[in-house]
Image 1 (tube, one colour):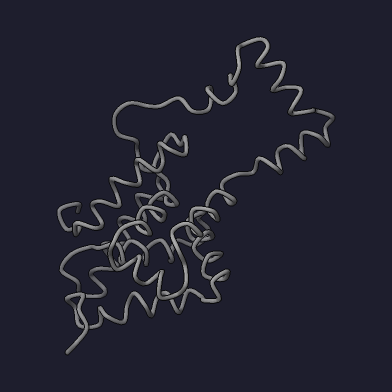
Image 2 (spheres, helix red, strand yellow; image 1 turned 30 degrees about the vertical axis):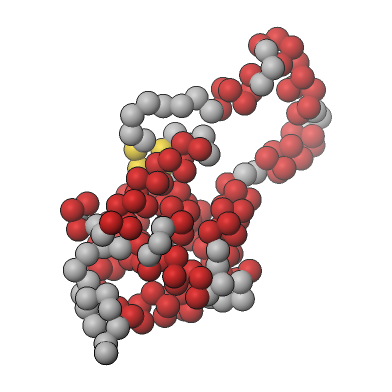
Length: 188
C-alpha cells in the first residue's frame, strides 16, 4: 500500500514517527498522523487552512486532549497524595528529573503503529479509491482521520474545527471538492 502514497503522505508517515518520539510515545498513534499531515505542504494543510485550522492549534489541542496531568494531579490530591511532594522525594532518592526520565526512554528503530493509526492508513486507501484518485495523499489521510470516530485524532480535529468556527462538513467539502474528477484536480 505504501507504494501508492504520494510524496506528501509518505513524508507525513515518516514525520508521524518523529512526532511520536518527541512526545515520548511508545508507538505512532492516529493523532501523530494528524499532526504530521497538518504540517505537510499538501491537500490536507490547504483544506485545514481553508477552514481556519492551523497546525499549531491542532498541536495545542492534541496536547490538551492527550495530557490529563491536571486531572491526575487533582485526582491524586483528592486521595491525599501531594504530587509535588512525591516528585521531590523521588528526585532526592533517584536524582533530579527521575520521573521525567522514566517516561521518556527513547526506543531505537522504528516505532509501531497503533491499531487505530494503522486503520486510518488503511481507510486512506479507501478514501483514495472512493474519490478515484491515482495515489494516496495527505488529504485522503485527513479524511480517514476525520471518519475515525471516537479517536483522539478525530476529537482533536473536531475541536479544532469548532474552535475555528467550522465543522466536519466544511472540511470534507474542502478536501473532496477538487477531487471530484478522479485525478485529484478540479475540472477546467
